[in-house]
Amino acid sequence: MKWKWLLMLSWALYSPAWAATAALLDGNHLREVLKKNQPCCVIDARGEGARKQQPIPFAVIYKEGIKPKPGGFALVVGGNDRQALEIAQAVARKSGQDVYAVKGGYAAWIQIQAGGGKSAAPETLMPQNFTIPSNTCEQGQALHEYK
Image (cartoon, rainbow, N blue to C red; front, side, top):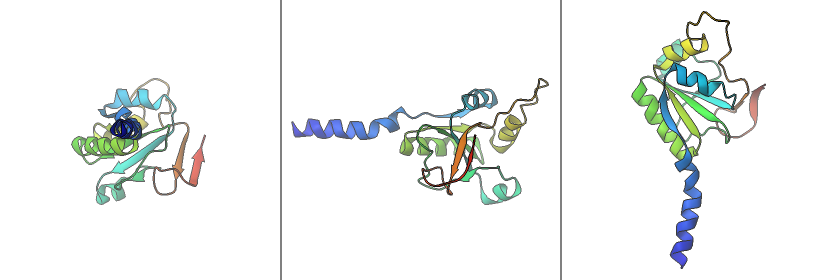
């Protein structure tokens, strides 16, 4: 009887992480995700040289144990697709939040921000409502809040 209780307790504790999504998304799929206007955290998982040469505005530098805010999701921009997906899977597994890797890395992210070369009226694809907590994607005192 006691083992059933422990099994149920462990399932309840780990089930949010099982529900998390980690996927490698291309530009079109990322546009759809960003249009949902959920709180978003951009994680820059590139090497230090790339981050300094081509910084991503409002991005959080990846470090072990980083977690998106509950109710939101994260986007990982990596040095390559494999690295970005591996980091997205690790963050999703630990946080229980949805995490998406940007297919094509920094170049794809910039193209998405620029509207993907569409000739139609420009549309903003940056998250419209997001919070940047102190130095991580975790909950905490926010440095800036955009609405």
